[in-house]
Amino acid sequence: MNRSLFFLATLLSISNLALAQQSAAAPAHHHAPATAKPSADKLWTDLLAGNERFISGKTHAYNVVALRRELASGQQPNVIVLSCSDSRVAPELVFDHSLGDLFVVRTAGNVADLVGLGSIEYAVDHMHPPLLVVLGHQKCGAVTAACSGEKMPSRNLEAIVDKIDPAVTQAKTYAKSDNLIESAIKENVHQSAKDLLANSEIIRDAVTAGKLKVIEAEYELESGQVVRLNPSGGQN
Image (cartoon, rainbow, N blue to C red):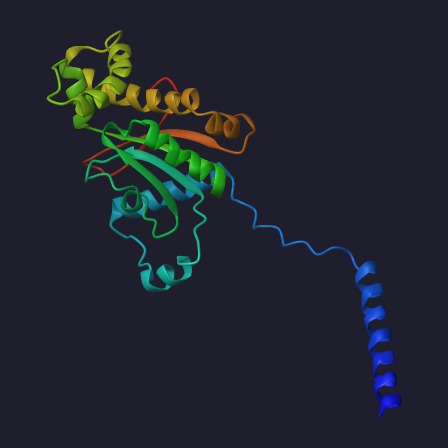
């Protein structure tokens, strides 16, 4: 019995030694690299293709049940959208995308306050999407209120108008009264994009490093079309 135990112990020792030597010789294991992200330009092209489907009414049919189950373990959206809270401008519908595709932050007037900035920073820092779209829209009520110059009935509403006022001031330098609101809407998209970079080191660093691209756009209510704007508020 003792001989048998000694023989078994010797075999186990030899096996353990061989395994230890094999582990030492093998390269360290690393997790497989994450799937490469599409470029910001490719993502923008995909968004515009979805917008074309939305315009024509030929939107995709998504299996939301399967998507919901798949996404229960986590999310990796490739696009951030800062848009207005207006019920007519839902980014997932406008771009014909579904669950898990877009990280959306919505505020009246598509302005980025501290909470909005923090939400976007979370996405940039944790999910590394290559594209951030600032999306305004025609006939924006928040911009219209800012253009009116009237005092808002609450401090919270005044805070929204205060964020839009610089855009209205800029629009007044060139716009006539009959197109002031539309000009201010475009300027407000530009102002929101500038505010993101000015007030967030995380967003600014990602843009500077070429990891994040900011695109400004406006949604046309009647046609349903999303039109890209250049940094000065005009159209590309």
